[in-house]
Image (tube, rainbow, N blue to C red; front, side, top):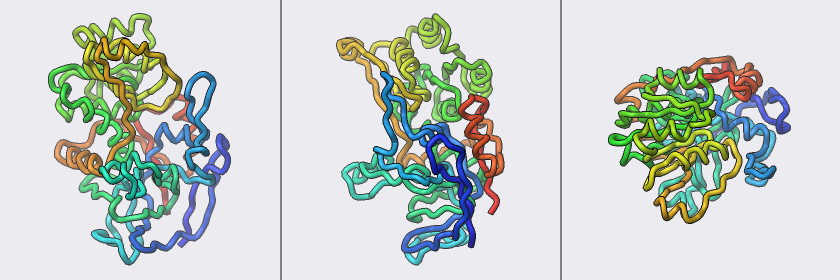
Length: 354
C-alpha cells in the first residue's frame, strides 16, 4: 500500500511530496487512511523552525527535539485500515479523531494525567509524523476518539483548536457565567474559543482583534462585543466593555503587545491565560502581581480527559459554528502561505485522497 506525504525537508522551504510504502502497524499501533487534516497556525512556527521569544532571540525547535523530514498536521481524522495485534476497542472501518498530544506515559507529568505537558513529548505532526499525508500511523488505540455523527472535516479542528480553547477556558470557568470573558485573537482558535465559551455558559464574550473582518466573524460566532486591539484606547474600551476591567482574559495570539494589553485591562484579582505562540516578550513590574493579585498563566493544548470532555460537549450541544473550508492535500503549500498572510478566516481542512 503506497502513501503520499507532504514533508518539511528544509525549514521555510516548500513542503515536498514523498511517496513510500505505508507502514504496517505493530503492537498497539493503528494505521489510518486520512480523511481530514486541519491546518493550524502553530504549523507555521514548525515550518519556520523557531519561535520568536523577544529581543531578537529565537527558540530553535531543533533544540526541542523536532527532526526533519517531518510530516506536519496534528488535527486529524481518519478511517482505520489496519491494526496491530495488541490494539483494543477499534476495528478496520472505524472513523476516529486522533488526539495528537501524546506523552511518554512514564514521567511525573504523564502520571498526573497531563500527557500534553509530557517532559518527553511525542506529539503527532510535531515530534512524530502527522496528517499531511494519505496515511498516518498512530502509536496506540488509546489516542483515538469516536466522533459520532460529526463530519471528519468538522471534527478534525477539535484535536487542536478545539481542545486548546476548551482547556484554556476551563482555567477561568469559575467566572464565565457571571463575568465577561475577553478573548484576544479571532483566528481559528479564537473563534473556537468564542463559540465554546458560549456553550460553557458565558453570557458576555468580548472579542479583541485588529482585523475588522475577523471581529465581524467573531460577532457572528457568538461574541457580544468587539474591540479593535490596535486602537489607541483599546485598554479603556476593554475596561468599559467588561464593567471596569476583565476578570478573565484568554489571549490566543500571545505576542508581547497582546499580553501587555491583557495585563493592562485586567481588574484586580483577575486572570490572564496566554495560549498563542506568536512570540515576543513582556515586562511586568513584580509588585503589580501581588498588589493587583494578578494571575498570569499559560495553557498548552489539552489532556486526554479534556479531549473526551470536549467531544461530549459538542455531541450534546452541537458543533461550534466556526467557518471551515476544505482544500485538497496538494494545496498544502498554498494554504500555509495564505494562513501566514492572514487570508484565512476560521479553519482550512485538507482532505487527502488516498
